[in-house]
Length: 114
Image 1 (cartoon, rainbow, N blue to C red):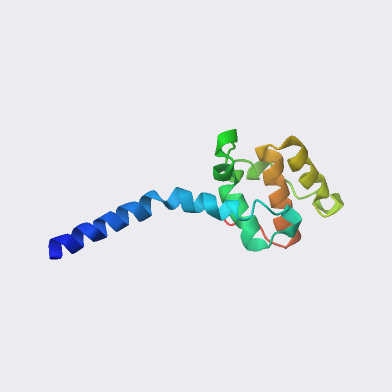
Image 2 (image 1 turned 60 degrees about the horizontal axis):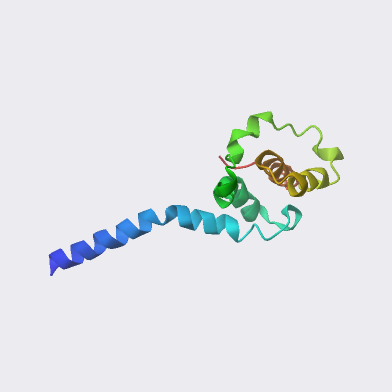
């Protein structure tokens, strides 16, 4: 009986650990239907963390890859990040989309949690 329970628990742990990327992808996917200006902090943070998984077929890099190149100097003149949202939707590329998420986090007075 103990062996059977042990095997069952090992099987459950295996399936939980193998499904973590799927859970991360779903976390970003639920937010990806919204425009960046419609997202709350949690959604923006999930997009920051998992955008590249959501768009893995496009070979997107993680947003953390670009953070050192992002400056907030132009954010005040960006029409509440509209400039970056437009570039994201027009270019549909990882860097401008991450920049848009970064800008929207900045508007909230937040930075991406690393």
